[in-house]
Length: 280
Image 1 (cartoon, rainbow, N blue to C red):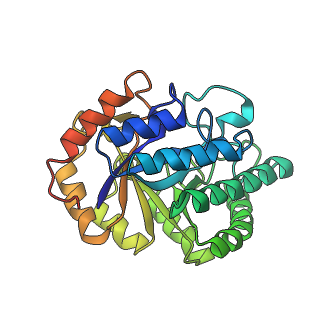
Image 2: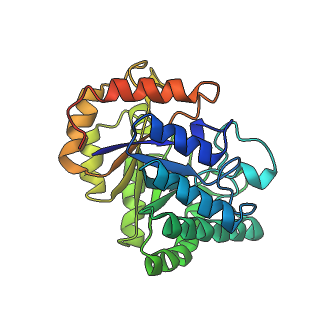
């Protein structure tokens, strides 16, 4: 496994500055936030994307994932917490089409930046829209996207989270069976899994080779707040040694909760995680 860090902690910096700082800290990979203030597809130009690719190369990094979970830029607001709507399951046809088109742009970013995949969420249950109907809309959206992604060799990982339409490993595993595409799998956030009381070995068994990318952070108790690894309640020795048996990709530390001190958070996270002999 290789260690990566997400630019979504560095929202007070440009994306190129964030990449440089992550590289300087010694990470092997970087996850790019496909939202404001970084790689928001509806406002970023070709030259900016080329500059980003050059910054990644200069920093000797690999792009681990294009994080397409949020959509703060849609509302012309500053990024401060994950905003999932409009999602691929939004009942408003125009809003849903926007998200489909935006996700295609993220897939194009993945091709250019040589990322193996992108991550998405199912979105939240929307008032007035039955969750089962919402899941049907999500399925219809993904049918359109999977053909686009498959032609370009980019995988789509769904991230589940408490409170979303797909909020557990069991629900994601069932949903993946319905679509049954080699291009569709999981962006597994181990902190979310911990909050749900899931056992990592059982999660890996249920997803059975469908884990495309990992998000990692610590959690304290059952409060959903991303902490620097080592500051919370999660058993990282068990998590990482179990994960190593079934997974050999990038593990991205996601600490968007530390915008005031992202370098320090990234440094402390790496120092803590490197004590475990699971990294290659």
